Image (tube, rainbow, N blue to C red; front, side, top):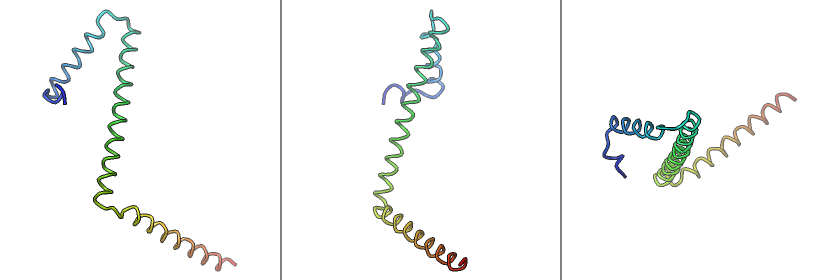
Amino acid sequence: MLLIDAIGPNQLAILSALIAIELSEGKTINEINVIGDFLIAIGSVMTTIAAQQQNQQEGQQNQEQNPNAQEQQSSNMQAQIQQLQEQLEELKKRIG
């Protein structure tokens, strides 16, 4: 990726602290809050994007590994529905 791949976790933490200090320098409390909230919002959106990409990749891998999985799941649901309908009919007979 970028420089981030070459930096260890401790160095990354120090770098983020230095950036935060630099961005806060000479700002009012309200300005610091706005900048901080803005950066948090960016991080939240990036995390959501990454999670959805991972979800889609896993779904695609599962589909490639078992292309009949969706058909099997549908068939299982149909069998379960049939069993429930049969049980319901049996209950109806018992009741009246």
